[in-house]
Length: 460
Image 1 (cartoon, one colour):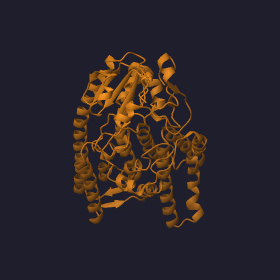
Image 2: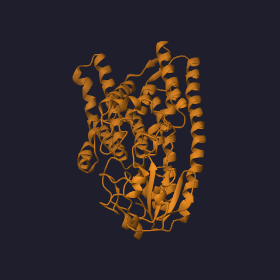
Image 3: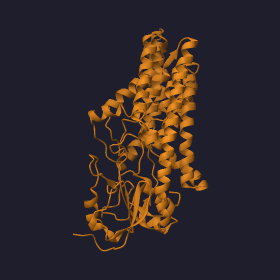
Image 4: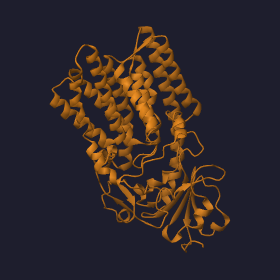
């Protein structure tokens, strides 16, 4: 995207075409930022801004909804670094931050003139949709819950039904992006895979990162704390955000896991359910507020420390593997085989996309990119020949139940004439028959780069 067709190699290997879609948040921001400071630095900078932007939004939304920062809102801090962000759904994470700020803005303009409200809301909704479709859905339910709660209070206060509901009509402009969604639906990926067993599993994934005991324990501690506070009546419930949490939780159970080519679509809603539910609690009593705040901040800091230590170790291993690219000439063709993330492994680490950095660093072709409908960038090298997308790059390690390719079978069909290198991650030793045409070039922490010495056709 940043290269814009300047590299002869990248033009040969990949096709990039802009189109309007509900998944462009960081992509659009990378155009100026990446062009100014580079792709990798730009991506790191923009990604680093998401968490503080979200935390500030939680603060302002708590003030907007309840008049002050409520202590239970601090229990929502751990959900800022939740599975969707840590897994790498950056556009969605950005959309969520923008949606939360959009709700703050809506609280401030909802008493303006109807026309101004409608225009402002349509603009915010379009921006959130452009960041990510699922973020817009969250924003819609949030605004809907706020308006439904206000209408209910007005009706209970003696206003007629029409007078209570009429102010809500100007919020219908939030549905403006539906036309964008319908226009882009024809180019989107598959939708489906409704699996109740997976949904039950996702309930444990909300904070998945470094330690199964800490991640599940954190969810349990927060759930027990909230149940205790409600049982002791140390908190009251703010109806609008609580209703938004309930609506999102119901939607989680109704929607498929994959929507328009995006997997984990339902799982992404669970951290937002927790955030809205916690922001919807008002604390009572100064001493109790301090205890609740201490629990929320303390748990957040413990999780942040554990995450940082784990990520430092992962970063060192990745840096070791990436030294292999020093041995790779520009424009090389690299075939990758790596297990999918979390293959029988709880820590949220991954080797499946390390090799993709060869695209930017060495203008190389790697078969680790998605070749599915709806993507802005698609691999065109090896088109129709296989070994050109993430499916061909997925390894099923021996002795596991993970889905993917068997190493021996993958090498047996491998088109040697179409590649220069084979980069294997956590693959184990090469089969003896393949050592004759693969020469080890570099061994990193988790990956081994092999140079192809015999480019003859694959064995029958």
